[in-house]
Length: 53
Image (cartoon, rainbow, N blue to C red; front, side, top):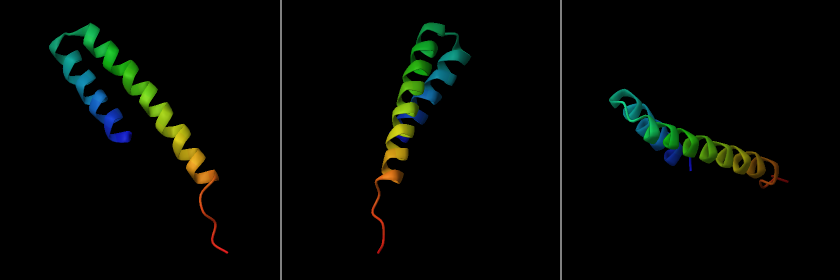
């Protein structure tokens, strides 16, 4: 999930440099959504992870 987020951020940066503002904005929004999903899943896995006895 984090790899997808990084990929979309790179696409947004390249599109922004080349002047494609619509694509850059869309890629940025997708990256934000994926990052927050990753963050929520990461926190849930920390909270519900296996505990050693």
